[in-house]
Image (cartoon, rainbow, N blue to C red; front, side):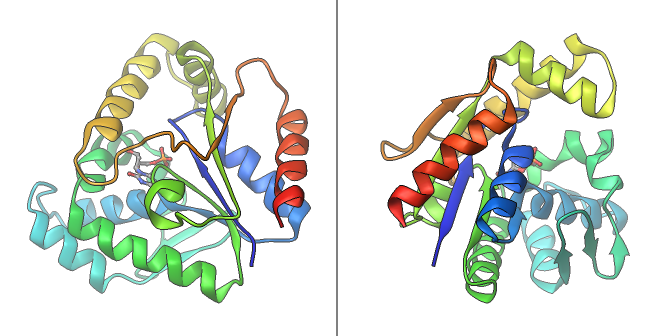
Length: 212
Ligand code: DC
């Protein structure tokens, strides 16, 4: 079973590259950030205080999530657009810090890979915690300016403001106690700042094929 773990900070190109790689390998793609975002969306909708760890965890365990390549549903609601909005984006780190939520989502991510007989999985703790035995671990990164510019090109906004938001989220994701964003020593570290998607995908394809 082939499992490719793709980790890295926001705006490093993870989603685009993971999707393209999955297509080339004939595997499914899982965006684990979308799962944290979907829980955040559901908690906001239910008017749950996001700092109430037990309540948010309880909601997570009870929630039904469906993730396809281009849509996210939680408890029957289409959350695809809302999970990329400012409200969810600014609140998601608080949910991602909740260890009970992480335990539940991690289990679902492992189950998803078992059900789909492998996959390309992107997130922050995929190679370090969720799939420590992944076929290939990749840590994608890019300069802060390039990452902010990519987000603006994708969803609009002001580069400086987006850069500040990204830096704040990176700091929270890297400093939390439970499964922070880290580079593992066995990951291929790739800076995507000055490279095309095709170029990175073809490099990753070679790396996967060499290992499988
Ligand atoms: O990749 P993204 O920006 O959609 O991720 C949303 C948030 O979820 C971000 O704060 C990092 C967090 N996250 C995480 O803690 N662990 C993952 N495996 C994926 C995302």
